[in-house]
Image (cartoon, rainbow, N blue to C red; front, side, top):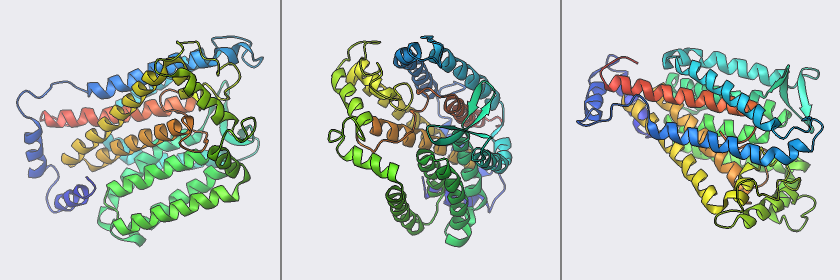
Length: 410
């Protein structure tokens, strides 16, 4: 796929848009007996299943915290109701976003990215950005808080795809194709690390440079970037005491199970208690004030305790299916010479795949503890809204693909 995009783009640049290659692709895809559905059912059902499982598990994981906190008014349903409201809001905004053609998204991509950068700047200004537990990541909007880094993931996927399409002829050049994007992402990374939000920095960097790679950036340049990124992450960890402490706690959580390894040790206990089929929905012990952030970062650990290995496997399969469908939709768009739409779809697939992998890895002790939520499932207003927007855009790409394959217009 990586090599097909630049080749097709160079061919397209030598003939009028909508030429013979797109027509031949349509004829190949429109084989007898092809489904007449308007949207990909596997994508829809995998996403809806994850959202609904997340709603149930957020309620289960948060009951004890909600009942025992003065902040929530000792209401057991506090987090469930808020999560439901965020889910409804995300669905409504997603329905609106689905109505927007991909051509309009491409026109708006640079401006949305600028808006995202401005929000990241605003959140760092004392008195404007809201600080919680030493991190300044939120903008207070009355009864809700906006986390700009979550929206920035959507904007990064759109901007990286638009940039790649505009710079297709320069993708083999480090100076003209790769360097400008690298400088932009480094600036965004600087803002995110000031919050600090290292997890969001990793995800946004992966989205941006992953889209560049899929768009045909020079292989040697990308290899050098990968080496530089690894060295940079090591330096960031070594230069920050709290990040270094997390890595040391990850290496042997049982050495200091009541200190640096507290979260991970209790997450592992939850996985161990769950065994094959779990202790039953609502039966988790670790969520009873033992496991911090049980309804956000460590939701999977509670799910593992209550639903066991079978429950975790079901979630992994659903995420794998969602990511596979995102890449399949992206490939279909690129075959139809819809390069921006195809790269956006694959960028969203990268985002969902990488963030879910990191969260699951942290919960299982495979990766150092990092404050990243599980997409579509964990509690968090900005995250759920951003996820729903991304899914709506992905469904729009799929819908336009199918309209073109029927001989209509996107």
